[in-house]
Image (cartoon, rainbow, N blue to C red; front, side, top):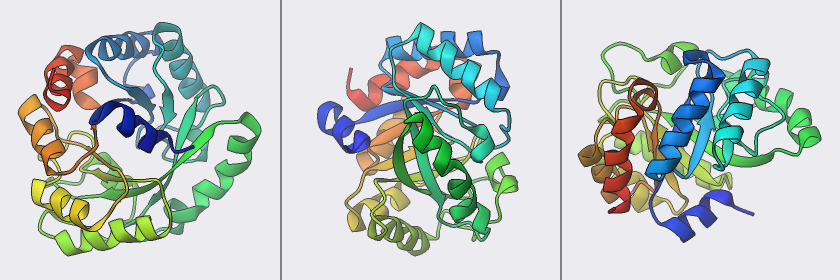
Length: 244
């Protein structure tokens, strides 16, 4: 089963809501997820760059499941940030990290629990693109082979590596609160050279920008910070990428 490919086949372009358990109480996270579901979001990702409390992740997933029927996908920064009650987990390799911990280390630690709990893994090539003057939270947390907005060939090389490793999808990530989103030209370049689904997130704050990303080749748009600031803004973003 390939959840991402199946989703795209059924829905075309899709939207994922990203909720950081540290940024609001579980009850509020559930309410936000419910609003995003009403607007047409397809799944809820749960995670953040600094989350270490598995119990908090569990409670957040629990609240989201009580208030929505959306699939829950763990988006962990480490083996400490997973919980047994999620449906899926992005089992991801931070492709442009120079730290083995983010390439294989945390994945190895988490694997037995994922197996025991029956969480369905979605393998992902996670690629961080530096789009801000100052490092985003995720950039601070990981040692990176930095990819800037003009490094199209480098981004393509990492994306191809993910595809050749038979990972199920690519995530081009500008980071939470990024000043600018991943450039359209970079998405186009990656789309031209690869065949697996492309997820794009970070710095996307309006429907026009989201539509530009899907037109460039993104299959799924992720919003995190805006969901937490004002869930109502998600309506326009989802409407633009789904033409509703």
